[in-house]
Amino acid sequence: MRKRQVLKAVALVVTALTATQSIADGNTFKIGLILPMTGQQASTGRQIEAAAKLYMAQNGDTVAGKKIHLIIKDDTTIPDVSKRLAQELVVNDKVDVLAGFGITPSALATAPIATQSKTPMVVMAAATSSITQASPYIVRTSFTLAQAAVAMGDWAPKNGMKKVVTLVSDYGPGIDAEKYFVERLLFNGGQVAESLRVPMRNPDFAPFLQKVRDLKPDALFVFVPSGAGAAVMKQFLERGMDKAGIKLIGTGDVTDDDQLNDMGDGALHVVTSHHYSASHPSATNKKFVEAFQKANKGMRPNFMAVGGYDGMRVIYEALKASKGQGGGDALLAAMKGQIFESPRGPMFIDSQTRDIVQNIYLRKVQRQDGQLYNVEFDVIKDVKDPGKTK
Ligand code: VNL
Image (cartoon, rainbow, N blue to C red):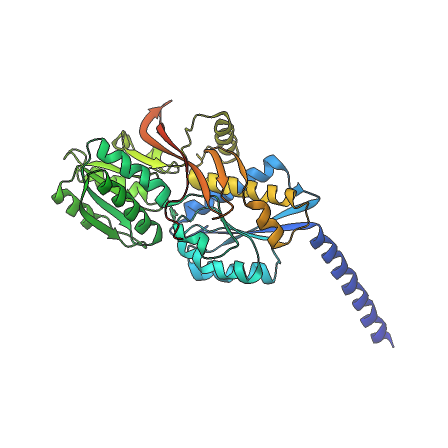
């Protein structure tokens, strides 16, 4: 008799709890942010986490009547872990949106989960062209290497660098950077002395740089992922390659704002092409950089931070536009076609490709107020990803 009553009471409590839970869920909007918080690309996770939190601090955590719940998971820079975490976030946590993705293999591994569960997946960092084609639920707020590299392939040969060696990380974004840079370089009358590819994991640049020295090109074009640029710069300078008359050029990943200020004067005058510089001269960017630094002990935001910040904006606005109703397809529809001013400049999510259209800037490393910055000196407006296959 007693036992029965206890059981009944327990059942009632459980029912009540479940009810509260489901009411809470009904008013909650969950964003599963999968990032490399440890491992080789940990700086990317750190930057995006800080940016997402800043966006929420500035814009509140209630949107269209829903309480935003950010769930951050560390994929340790390992694609299989990204995929498993995404599965758990969708099945157990019932997230409304998946976001983050520090490296291309993580984004590609997770794409099928987004498709199967009809969950929008906002790629805030990874930058291989093909990613947006891996799932109709992917929207990108970072950039593509093809987008950035084309500008350098036009600029370098017109500025005295005809004979170039390329050195890229041997995976998706590196292969895109090499392909689109070389295509434009050749088109503009330049020549490729050699194309070198270094392993993505634990790269040792020394033997490759020695080879470049022997080839004596006018310039060395480099793509390495965010976080690896300082090592390249150090070894380039240690080998006296600048003194041997070889110019270092690349996409802006190599002079990443996260590391640039610690690279020293050897980095001065390096020219790169990219979509974001912390010194981008707009009121929107000044406000962003100041607030980011204030909230993060002076840490300077890099292009990863801006991808995360704008990604949150795309999610918030999609939730508003779909009036808090949620549902993957409604959210996705409201992400497509968004157009707004980012700290990087104007940006647009192309509804056909779900990829980003944005300005690409040519920048030169210079000292401003005692610090090293990528100072923009030219712009190619509204660049679509040239790497889309039909
Ligand atoms: C990727 C592209 C990663 C560019 C990066 O840094 C980067 C990628 C982590 O697609 O894997 O700077």
